[in-house]
Length: 262
Length: 312
Image (cartoon, rainbow over all chains, first blue to last red; front, side, top):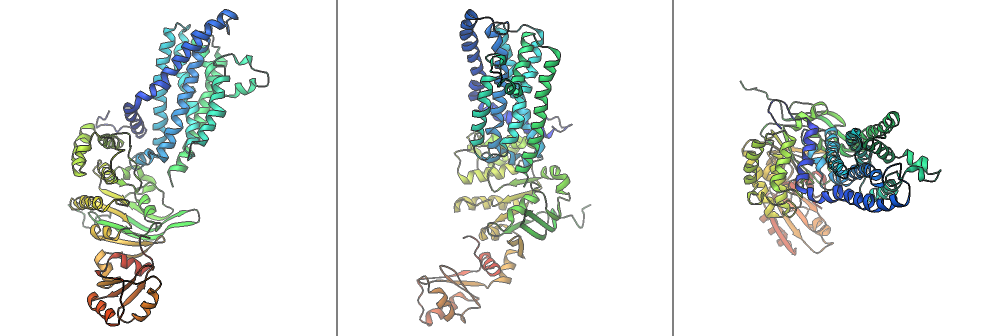
């Protein structure tokens, strides 16, 4: 890494901490970040899917497994992005005080933030790549466009991670996080088109689904994996997620600075 | 060729720190020279930590000027921090990682090559007497060991300036003495030390020069012995009577000492000859429950300057 010629960028040194720490603790995260989605895929896609496919028309014109596999990719990215931005961020301020240790060194607040979000991006890349490999093994991939589902899933995760990190930096206990789960992540997981098309929702609820980031992540990933993506709607989905990520990043810069520099 | 007037390691002029309406550091001036052990002595809330955080470029200056290593913290904080080591008041060790890992991750923030980190870590573990715990997790270590590890960690970048914010608070006496011994060695090696403490014995043992801080201002500054000579007497007689009697007894003993102080639980008589003063107390027929003759300390200086004790 260090060549002696060019210094390692400051934010990358921050990312290095999280990577080093992960090497020591990765085992516990394998269940939540990898095994759960695969179990979902097996239970819902293969198990429930056989029932769905036998008794009704194909969902969205494809077998149920093919329908939910890309949806679960986006939903998994959401979970990881959100999880990694909640307790780890608050803990780095309140419990372990990692951020303060970093700030006593050449790192600045912006490096601390970029390093942490950068690490979350690395985690999202790893999980998305493995997951897409599994999906391919299930025979779900129907289009070369599926390769673009990889960045799409990463951005989906970041669109949750950045604003949630901004929020987490303002928190002192887990009350706010519990609310995010109850009122945000779990309803999104169930009603954003992961398990059934949003068009099945009651009329009044549909606009709500369209407004949520997970809907756009699911729509984008599904279109790319199944090869049904249309250019402009996909660009719209991607733009929504990128803008949400950037807005979250700007907010996080403000909340991190307010909390860490006194 | 050496500079005949080297720039001080830290230079503060009219330095201020405000939090809203509250003034934590109220226009102080000081200079810290290379190789010096400089102390900030004062009770909790005196403004010591705020001053430390400004020197370590973690907290912006509210007013006045501050130069650290000849640079401006507002614009060159990152460069300054690459040359200072900070031992914060609250530990920020990673409890899940091992002792050695904690040194390694910290060294990487300074972009040190791995072989350099490895070599220094071994040396510092030896210095901190933690070699045998190198591969243990930090969580179960004692408070003294964690503090020593924090100091070792702050030294991994081979800093020009080591800043210690209450390094021994919460430690038992044995752990404190071990830590003082380590800090004394650093001082002998020529490392510039900046220390805050509310322990007068710590300040007396370690500091070449110190400032007594109270309510954000300096009440006095100088070498520990000079401060004692100036603001206190050579010896002190501590008398303990039944509670409630101290004020009355003080009136009757007003003329036996240069100065008297009535505390909640005891009476202090400031004098040049403690034994003679105590004999005079007995001659007047006063029988305290306990009596102690001792040398004056910085605690007495602080009491004289502020009217309050350092540790409540």
